[in-house]
Image (cartoon, rainbow, N blue to C red; front, top):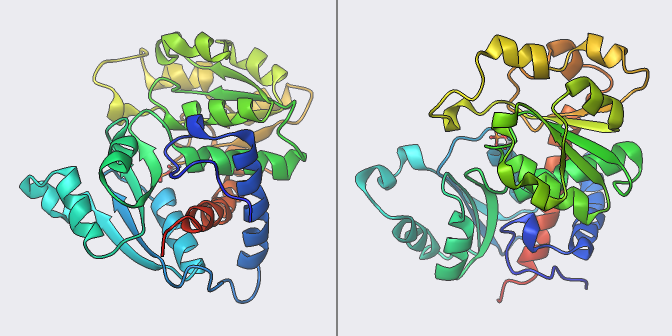
Length: 309
Ligand code: CP
């Protein structure tokens, strides 16, 4: 059976194109499974998975938990807010206590960049990065590419613009790596203050005019402004941000072509995207959420094949 070339899913940066193809092929199978009347397979009956969320999450946490349960794994959940982390326990102590309970796979979201890599060097379990600070969110990028492939037939050759707060976004960086690995062209669009200085070194062009960016692209992946990661003002006001970078139906109607609208969530309706666009036929936002379960089932299933029994 084909195997992933990596021992953990720490970032898209570490994957090869063949890994993405294998994950998508496996996800195709699981997407069929989750649309059956009985949405569950016994594949991981002997696997225990811990979901460690040190940062808030709705979609990713629920999606991983559902994916694990659909695979019949045993699942334990941990949220930092209700844990002994509040009493000063270190990350390694927390995780080692959980692993002492014979856990095979750890899914972790953490505010620190590189937390997943750090963990993978110190504990004997498969690690899946569910978002590390402003760095990477690999399963989000995988489900985004999977959704583009489903909607447009292929990712190769497609033009994708990522709009919004690129500077603080782990979704942006993982998407850039994933899309380029599959042969897509990527541009970013947003206020200059929210575009990282290193972006050109990734082979990504910057377009600060939203209309031009949308005229160029096949797909717009819209990101929210991450106010919780900002300790200074990056633009004068939310109103001005929306005027310059908010996507509304008028802008889309004037493009003279249809483009696909994506958003990883959570959405700030009326700021980066209007409700009519988010809920329109061009939007695949809920398809992304549905595909997230199948893609995460695929990642977990493939890593579980490497667990020594
Ligand atoms: N897309 C995403 O990561 O959403 P959550 O923060 O709700 O998990």
